[in-house]
Image (cartoon, rainbow, N blue to C red; front, side):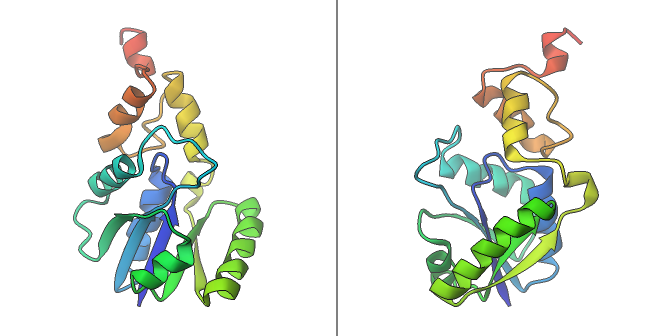
Length: 166
């Protein structure tokens, strides 16, 4: 069975990586699809986000990363996915994700599988990472170390330790 795990991944977090690693063991294939919403502005291009994801997933043999700007159900069909995978951090995520799952079922006939994140990642969001990075606050506990420097650089900020001369 092949799953597609889609998101903006702007930027990817340790929570995203956890879902990817765990899902890679559950499915024959996992497609991580970097999608962009037209109404949002992103600091990183879709291609940059794909490169970051490829850096952090390492050598997971059944995982591949793609960029697309289409509708998720169309991307899933085009890539040969059997199900859509979504990560859940909390109860608020669940309500929104259930709405998306129902829409994907109605418009594309695609079922959605949910994986709840580990508790240590439940309060991490890309929004919080972006805000912290923009102010040079520590993000290393929230994002994989391989991409922390890129994130700080994109915001023109130095990590807190460097600003304080530590």
